[in-house]
Amino acid sequence: MTSQSRSADDIFAGFFGSNSPNQNRRETGISSRSADDIFAGFFGSNSPNQNRRGTGISSNLNGDDNDISRSFEQSFGVSAPGKDPAIKHTLPCSLEELYQGATKRVKITREVADRSGLTRETEEILTIDTKPGWKKGTKITFEEKGNERPNITPADVVFIVDEKPHSEFTRDGNDLIVTRRISVTEAFTGYTVHLITLDGRNLTLPINDVIHPNYQKFVPNEGMPILGDPTKRGILKIKFDIRFPTRVNAEQKAGIRRLFGP
Image (cartoon, rainbow, N blue to C red; front, top):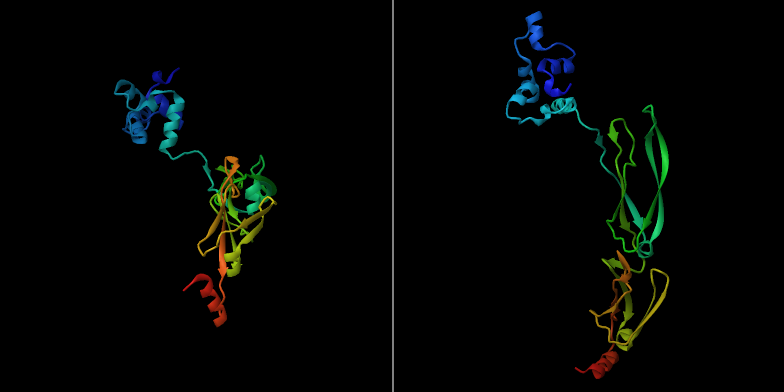
């Protein structure tokens, strides 16, 4: 039998395990409200019989019994299980790991529920493969790896990349910056930069220009890998900190004037 052929009395009895108010009124005299009135009170609409005769605005009550049950659940606040907020951890990475890529293993502790609903603490190893070009702030998500609790969807576990300080290089987006401290003599007569790159190569860069305080040497394709295209890299920027003498005697001053003019 479809819901269209059921009366409001039948549906009332199905929900509440008793006769409709009309029948109760005849037997006990307790209620004078009709099943239609009670449907309107619960669901903010008419009974299925009236909807069928009326405008059809409330489609939930014109369908099958499951539709009616869903309306009942919504009216009384029954909802699907919630989900715990994400658990966030910092993932420290060296510039070498973000330059070449690396495999990192992280141990977490979480509560796991068995079939009876009892929980026990367990350890789990999560594997993260860092990709060349990842930056600070990159997020890696392991879905539903939080604690298991009844009627709650476990939280996601999120690792957020942080860059460890490096003794030689500073990162600026896809570029790498290195600073060399040189003397005034080296600034005027030339200087050779020797570097070990993040992937272990020896880099030798002779500079024959006069190195002034704002001078920078740009080396293309020696910066960080560009995410999505590891064959391309940013720029290596070499800056210079020139050490000026704190004192110059009269003879030295005269020599500087002869060399550079007044």
